[in-house]
Amino acid sequence: MDGQAISGPVANPLSLIPYVFLSASSTGEGAIDEVVLDALCAIRLHLDMEVAFVSEFAEGRRWFRYVDSALEIVPIAVGGSDPLELSYCQRVVDGRLPELIQDAAQFPAALELAVTTALPVGAHLSVPIRLTNGQIYGTFCCFSTRPNLTLGDRDLAIMHLFADFTARQIRRELETERIRREMAQRVTTVLNPEAFTIVYQPIVRLSDNRVVGFEALTRFWSRPIRSPDVWFAEATQVGLSEELEMAAIAKALGGLAQLPDDVYVAINVSPDNILNGAIHRALGQTPLQRVVLEVTEHVAIPDYSQFGQRLAPLRDRGIRLAVDDAGAGYASFLHILQLNPDIIKLDIGLIRHIDTDVTRRALAAALVGFSQETGSTIVAEGVETPAELNALQQLRVGTVQGYLLGHPLPISEAAALF
Image (cartoon, rainbow, N blue to C red):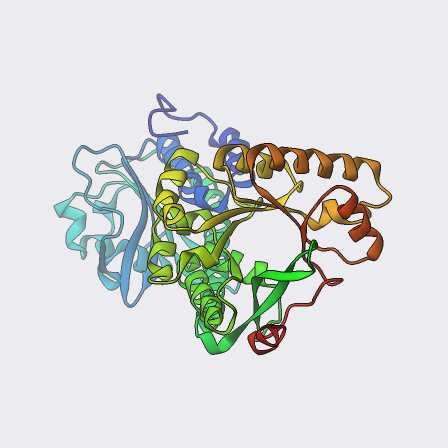
């Protein structure tokens, strides 16, 4: 619903409530603004008023958060404010003015306000918006430049209904913002390299039982203690993905100096931080032939052509690309087809029980065949039992990692393997 969705006064705005509630429940948090504007539009048209708005009281001022207007020149604007004491809203809340005014010119307390004659203000309805704790957030208001003697208690009751509905939407918005703020504070605490450590899990070539590389994994010490994917997901939600990911990558690449020159380090990077150039800046003068970028199955790539173009200069300088979690879902196969990776990493879910599960074995065999045709290398992740390892060897998987071959290690212990 927008300002043109209703052509005239609404005979019964209660009929619009199911639609507005549906909008609120079936859309994401980002749609709260639209839902509140729908409510303002509905009540303004029903009451045949010219302006409807939601105000917030803060720092002694009345801030206009949402505005719906039929006037060519709107006297108030979203984001604007005026002194709270000089407003109808404050005087309605403290009882100096009634919530329903048919004709402001008939109220001496209204005539004390310059806006009453300057605008002018004719009919006016305003009701408080209360939060869960009883605190007044602001007001839900309608006004017209002309009087309206038909307004009555029924109209005021409907205003209260819409104000209560709007209060629920605002509570949701405030709660979302509170959660986001706490999330940002948590992520900010782990941006310091001292708040996390990097461990290195060996990647072993089976033909000579030699460690050819390590996957760098981030471990966070800050509370709450949670898995790394949760930390990185929160960083993405609050716009700190680049900062956290690049901090982890910088620390991971610092371990290269302690490893033999022919051993590589695989680092996980999100597509966004390839597309925005962050990874290019983070790599700097790193010897790229010793680096593998792992792109996970769980993150979509919106434009494969652009992604390939951004990655091309790094691949020209020797960096290798791995598609992680292959076999976990459809996206990994799309990554493989579109990106021509150097390495395909079989997901732990595909490896688990591969020695007894015909379906898993068949899919792994197909990926091995694909890699042979395309010149890529297969790495099996999450190998934990001799039976799984034996099954992979029968499938001619030549490179593996997992607890059977080696647990993630601090860089000093990883270097000691050589």
